[in-house]
Image (cartoon, rainbow, N blue to C red; front, side):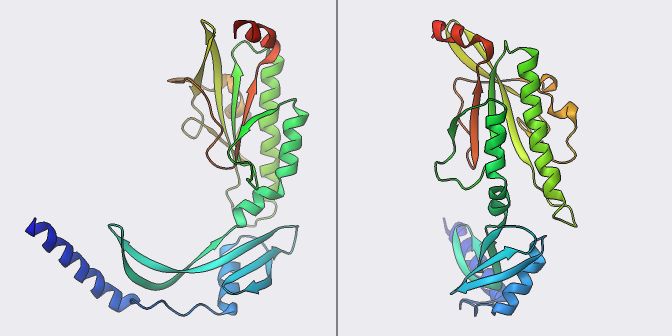
Length: 253
């Protein structure tokens, strides 16, 4: 017990000595508007300009398309074992740029879902501002045409990522994540077999994702089976595809 207490005291003293050199206990003065604008322009890979400022909250917009996002600088702190040891003297610039970029495509993503004849069974949050991930669950007796339709949907998502790449001189990660599951019915009960993509149990679809990676026929089935399926945790939707066997499912149910 004594050794544990002594260790905490030593750790605290070391942290305090570090803080003397890099910051301190007093919250640093907020950055100037000019500093914020310069920092955000450095961070965001798109031509932007400041729209307004309300206290410590700043609103920026793109100068090449209809996107606005917010930025709020927060003083950076040193946290060790759940304890706050003061400020580093630097600021974190939390912003909503990523959500705004995905939000820019939301209506088109929803139109793609409708165009391919899909329906959203559930979504992460009724108030989510964008869609960047999908869980697609399909019964394992789908026709070849129905499987091709799923693949074409994913290719259409890829086209959106190619379009987004045109707004950035440097590489910018804009991808859609698709988790694909086969639904198997045995004894009147459905189970969901997870497949393995290029990102664990999902496929990250970007400008360079190949047709071979997208084709759900090529996704290896894992030994991981779920008893039920839910939408992605954040900004995602669940799409369940019955195919031509919908009447059979109703009878078995």
